Length: 295
Image (cartoon, rainbow, N blue to C red; front, side, top):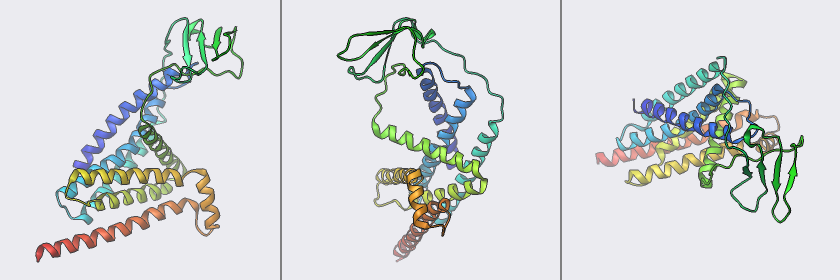
């Protein structure tokens, strides 16, 4: 119950916030991109599914450690719950694509004389739209640092407008985390599109490794320190998966294996092997602690 409630709460909250962020990104682009409400919701839900999977496993394992539950039973329960819930949500999102979408209405932001800039840096090139966002490809004035202002009656075919300047000063570690979560969500979608068997192999091995590492990270008697170390471990796994699933690393792994093993199975086998080692360590530590308590 704890895992299910935490998963649903994190998934719902993350979907809402991600949808709002995608909505803002859609509004920032000129001319507006052809998007639909359903497309934005699906993208937000896929991103939230990846975040909810990592977060709910982390929180639930920390809860089981503090309650001193049996490690094997805890890992097995959380593994099957997370696997079936994640697979069910992925299947539902994939089926939801067949629903007829509704077009997002165009919103006009800013009036005549709107100034667009590539970033908050004052030394970057700026574009002043004389007719505002109602005619984004119409007449404009381009302001280049240390050069006179230039007037353009219409935009060229290869001319792209900067985004509408919203305040965007998030720390880099949050930006990198959001990027890795997005890439992991896209990988889940790609595996699901290839075949359900490929999805089961990758997601199952990843969940198994997360459950194993999350329960093993208890180096101190302080629960806050343990969950902090587990969070760092989960962040490392997320970055590890993003790195090894990049096209360049896939080519290197394929050349190293030399067709002895499908490259798609390399990373899942690494997840499974490392998870088994961590489980053996957890079991031995649990048995030794019980013997010490009995003595």
